[in-house]
Amino acid sequence: MLKNITTTRWISVRHYAKDVRFGMEARSLLLRGVNIMANAVATTLGPRGRNVLIEQLLISPRITKDGATVANNVQLKDRRWNLGAQMLRQATNNTNNDVGDGTTTATILARGMACQGIQATRAGQVNVQLLREGILEGSQVVCETLSEMSESVETIGQVEAVAKVALNGNERQAELIGDTFLELGEGGAILLKESHSTKDEVKIQEGVSLPSGYCSPIFAMAADGDTLELGNCLLLLTLAKVDQISQILPALEMAKNRQQPLLIIAPHFASDVLKALVLNLLQGRVQVCAVKAPGFGDEQRDQMRDLAVAMGASLLEDASWLAKVTDEDLGEVVSVIVDAKNTHILKPINANEEEVENRIGHIRELIDEARTDQEVNQLQKRLGRMQGHLATIYVGGSSELEVTERKDRFKDALRAVRVAISDGVVPGGGCAYLRCIPALENLPEAQVPEHQMGREIVRDALRLPAYTIALNAGADPDEVVRTVLAESGNFGFDAATGEFCDLVARGIVDPTNVLRAAVSVAAGIASLLATTEVLITQQPVEAKIPKNQVTRDLAKLIGM
Image 1 (cartoon, rainbow, N blue to C red):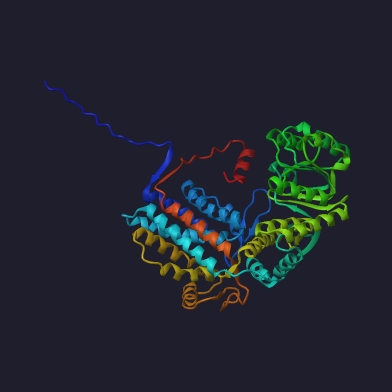
Image 2 (cartoon, rainbow, N blue to C red; image 1 turned 90 degrees about the horizontal axis):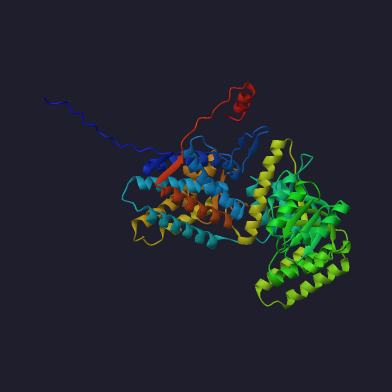
């Protein structure tokens, strides 16, 4: 008798601890996040750009037109979409870190290149690495063309023109920045603070600026931000490496006895020393901050001697001098302002004016004897530091929201002006990018099809800034782009008035380095998005809402 035989079939099922997506599906999910991010940021571009209102937990909302601020506040619930948004955020942050402006432009360009790059991969038979090379090659051609187009900034009127664009056409604020740079020169230090009135004003203070900030961000924790202010401060200047806390204990004791904050400037601080200083600060014993001395070698010694003379302090050459420090060795100033990158020392109390003038005269003699441009530039920086000033722009407004939004615009304008002074300007309003299109079209046909495809992706993306500016201004963007492309030179669209004109003559310009950085960063991020093949994210986890009514209400408040 035959028995029924049951055949068991084993089906292989792949289970992942994380969510894993491949190929076109992965790129499409990333693109969803890219589009959401770019749409949010693009609304702020141009003089007719719109505001973005951002919720802030437990405090007042923030309103802004700053692209980097908007990008940093976009968080998407879907992890896969959010990864695309995060990659695009890198474009804004990298551009902001490099040149301090152009974040919105970089986002728009990156989205345009990424969309076309991903679309090209849909057709198949495309070598994505060669496509990436083509995109990067095209962006390099654009950067070179922008450099050839650039004009130097030589007048305060040009400075005000750059500032006016960043300030969305506000002439009064642009004139304020122009007057400040006229007073300080391009190397002057400028701070932004909130005003107690509705008007903007600037105050100039004498002082010395150093291109180095605090050694640890914890020193600024008590300042409720990223800037530390020390009033009636003592200065300890040394060329010795501070490897042990015992080396600076005498100075700390003096500061404690005199109940004054202490700024220590030295070439090096050991990690244990910084930990001890931070612990000392947090425990409220002495308000102290450590700053690394600027420069290296002989240059550092010269700069520290300049600082000692300017501040009426003694420069302690080695550790043995530190052990014998006296009250007379410490400098004393009215105020010290320290952030992550700079230190501003204001109004020395005990400086010897005759010694300061002699030091300035000595530096001028060295300038006359210098043989290379590098030597002259370095000596000019030292001279400017000895004669330095600090400007504080007090930003006014009728409400906290307005003041915050205006401060964001002032920050962008100051960064744009500094970049423009160093690298020159090109026509604004997206016109400069449109003038780069013929440079790409006139290149010899690429031997590799993917390289040619990459160039065309960059070429098409160059239309987007001008298109977006016109769209935000309520004009027909297609007609604007066609009209500008049909002309040449500085002819472009003034979105503030809705007129076509000579943009440079009207003062509508962009810093050259800002546009170069924007297209370079955008090409890098977009090519990475287009060549992504696998997307790995955490599996979504449902938040467990507690049963207690109080904790339930708190969870609801934070969006759980």
